[in-house]
Image (cartoon, rainbow, N blue to C red; front, side):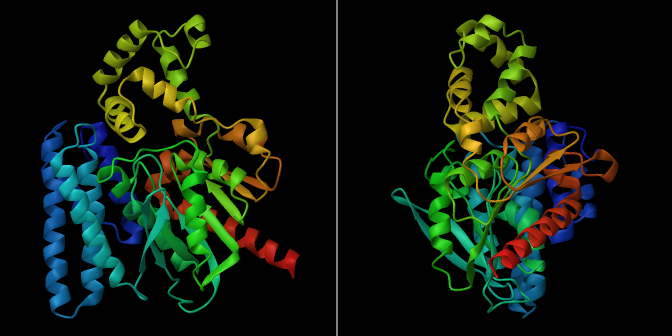
Length: 409
């Protein structure tokens, strides 16, 4: 049931509902905010969600002053989530100064939440090509001083460490894994403050993160897992093909050819076989027609024109297609993967339409989990039933790492 009449607003608000089991908000809060938002009015959406976040920050500060650390942390974590949802509707270039300010408040607030953890998180700055990847190392509360399997948790096309923590990190910590949260180029600070965009050769991002993990005394070097989500379903197998210090990776949802999905959509707009044969070069007249159509649809305009152009460094449809053309795995690359891979797909998720292709191409240990609408998990990243997704993904990780330990004993 949609709470917001505008589908773009409803999609972003659903993040809070998905994060509810992990401290990212509650249904009642979203219901109240829905009454404050004008249909298709991004300004009112931003004002409602960011305003509520500011209230939570004030409550958190008051709780912290009174010595109520648990309440303060809860308020800070929720505020971080609401701020992320608030500014996502502002994505695009030129970058809205409200987005920049809200992002900085989000990360400052998230940092306060991380400092109040049990045990507190450790902030990391990981060297990366003349700058630093922002990261946090969080120890499993049940094993704060033990060497443990560690999950490197990353994002996809537009999430930050906040969303990644709530969507995956909290469940992993509760299961006894240490967690290393990190952003990369095209995500969070590296995009918003430094202008760095996404790259198809994502192993160049994760290899420094693995290097950093191996310097931490509590990380089991034989049990490092990489788990992103969304666009990370392409990134994970790509990384595993080149970074062989990983014990396992999770592709949620598995993706073989990101650019191919865009081309499939262009065919629906009239892209001919002759035009397709000349890709990634795109006929200018057709590109203009495609852009007009994309801009007429709020969700597609946000996903491709506003988010895609910004995060992928594109200036028009032609350069966007040329960039995404690189985001493709071939059989030779997939054959390089040596660690176990979990491939997921979801019944109603367009991003997972080639998950089976990826699964079939993997020659080593693998498993495929398909999420359905009947279990309330058929949407992108199983967002409205992350509890289900986390249970099944972490069960697979438990079993996979246990088997590896037994084999090496």
